[in-house]
Image 1 (tube, rainbow, N blue to C red):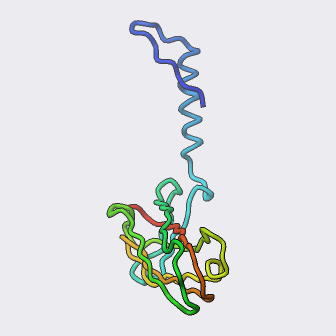
Image 2 (cartoon, rainbow, N blue to C red; image 1 turned 180 degrees about the vertical axis):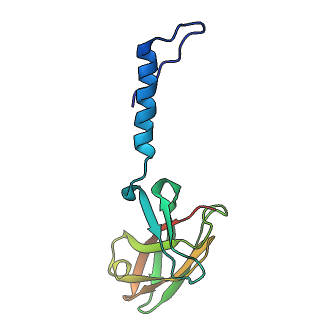
Image 3 (tube, one colour; image 1 turned 90 degrees about the vertical axis):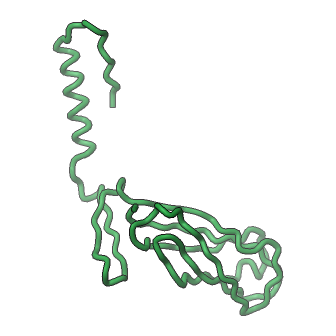
Length: 150
C-alpha cells in the first residue's frame, strides 16, 4: 500500500493528491472488510465459556519453552511435573494449549517421553512429563497457547 506524502503547509490540493488519498482509503477498507478467513473460532471445553468468533488479529498467541531437565538421570516410569506461567495480562479465559517435548540432547530416555497437560488457567499451564526409558535426559517443553486477550 502506498504511503501518502504529507502536503506542505499552504500547498494547494490537486485532483491527483485527492485521488491518492481516496485510493489509499479504499485499499485500507479492503484490508479491514469482513472475510470468514480473517476470523478464528475459539472453543473451550468449559461449559461456562461460549464459542468465540474473533478476528485473527484480536487473538492472543503465546509461544514459550520450559527447560525441564538438563542431563538429568531418570528412571522408566518416572514423572516430572512442570508449570509454565503466562503474563498476568495475557488471557481473559483459559486458552487452548499444546505442549510438546523436545529432546535437547538425543538419548533413548530423552526421546521416549510423553507430556500430559493437567491444568490450564488464564495465568498458567501445568503438566507432567513421563519418561518411558531409564537414562540421562535433557528435555525442553514447547508450549503454544491461543486464546482471547484480557
